[in-house]
Image (cartoon, rainbow, N blue to C red; front, top):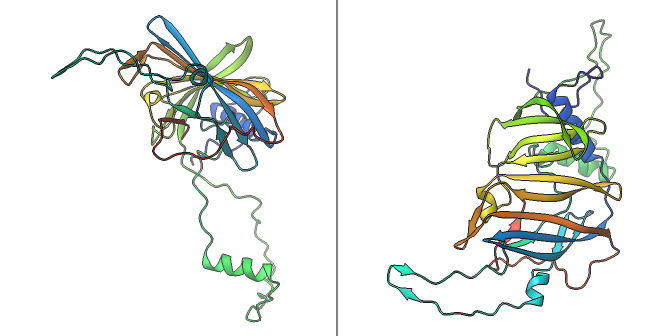
Amino acid sequence: MVLAAALTLVSAPGKLDAYEIFARAREYWESQHYPQMLQYDVAVRVVEGRTVRIERYASGYDDENATIAFDPISDEERAHPFRPHGINLVIPGLNVSKPQTPVDYLGVPILAPNYSFGIGTTPLTPPPQPPTDAELVREIRAEFHDPNPRWKPAPSPSPDTRLHEIAEVVSKERNYQITLAGVDAVDGSEAYHLKMRPLRDPGRYRLRDLWVDTATFAPRKLLEALNFVNGPGTTVPWSVTFADTGGALYIATETALAPMRYRRITYSQASVSVENVRPVDQFSSDLSTFVPSDGPLLMEEP
């Protein structure tokens, strides 16, 4: 029988297997409580040649409705509006002009500060099935207190002396093969190191390594095969770290583990950080949830 990785198991203390550690990490993630509305900054940092470039985007997250608000104009763009300059010299078959650095280095970030990267249950479980006609009828009758005159109580069953069913175990196909590689130090604390190999759909199941705190089972760090939906981040692996802010777990930094190329520009390094996370009563006026369909490249998680 193959059990889902999300199934909580029971083991003797000190003898946790890789799947139980992953299940405990999932439980930890699902137990987090966030303020209804958050504001924060998404900092995008790239290294182009010998130049370090950083721009920050004001962002907001509504936890109740799971919506992201954002300002598509970074602080760098406001301080230094883009003005084309120089001369483009084009020779048939040869472009010798230097490419301009994109206004948005990796795209406009539309990122939630508590995205789970598949540790949470939502990205890893099948979508809920629509109710059957019979279930809909029962729900409607219950809502309007309709006793359904055609319904007749079932006859009482005869006494059964056989063993009774006390539990049901449902088997599911695993999404990953998970192995425990050992215990490593992460930021001064011990963490279980899980190696994760997707058994199907590697573009969706992107986790490859996960470090879980040995004391709390909080996810501390992960490696994924690719990041974001579009853009240069989808071509390289990324490392992600987490931090506790105000008693809840948030993304700290996502770091590309290889150089990437975007619009003829090569970035030797790139990272995305979540900064200045704080609860608010309402979003500032420069934030919007409107996402243009034909606007700039967007940095979004799957």
